Amino acid sequence: MTGDELDRAAKAELRTLPKDLAKAVARHLVMAGRLLDEDAEQAYQHTLAARRKAARVGVVREACGLAAYHAGLWSVALSELRTARRLTGQEAYLSVMADAERGLGRPERALDLARSDEAKRLPPAEAIEMRIVESGARRDLGQHDAAVLALQIPELKDERLRPWSARLSYAYADALADAGREEEAADWFARAAAADRDGETDAAERYAEIEGLEIIDDDSEDG
Image 1: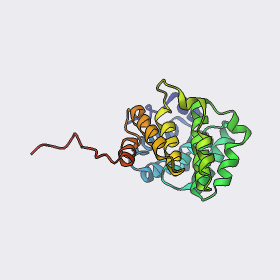
Image 2: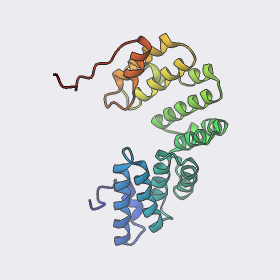
Image 3: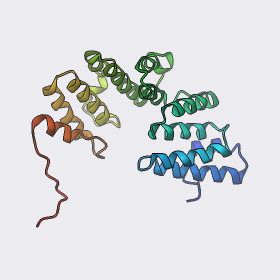
Image 4: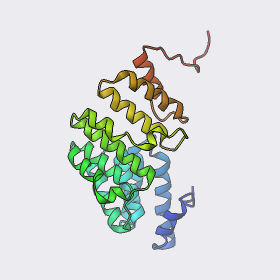
């Protein structure tokens, strides 16, 4: 690993640093990205190392915020992502910030972010993530019908497979289940499972649970 694996936009931000320092920071960011899903705490430690070397670089603070979020360090995530926004002027990861507010037990603040002017300018994928967070915040407040309504957007009925299809269908199914609408929830869990090509959700298991089915592990060895 050389640090060259970092994406082009991130490397461009690091060009403000001396070459050797930029390479060291890049290595930490690459390692953080690789570890994020399997060991969030270790990923966070790599971003802290990068932060110590380049605290004024937006992509470094952004990486630190995301790693903190995945590690469940909600306050740190909010602080780092706010700093990243100030440094870059970009509104990325607004939904992550809103979800961190939920993690801190502040669903009202999450809803404030979801209704903000910045949220109205989010690109489609991030806008859908914000809708998912908004629905979760409504559920936190016991507003189960409102949680369902928050996800009744045109993209929900899009028959084409999109990057957000599985997550959106799953969130809608989850909201329906919480609202006591289990028959509809089962249908949407089935849709989520069909769209979840990478196995990112437990939609198939949730569907089977509602329908009283038993999932057989095809990978188990005979005899």
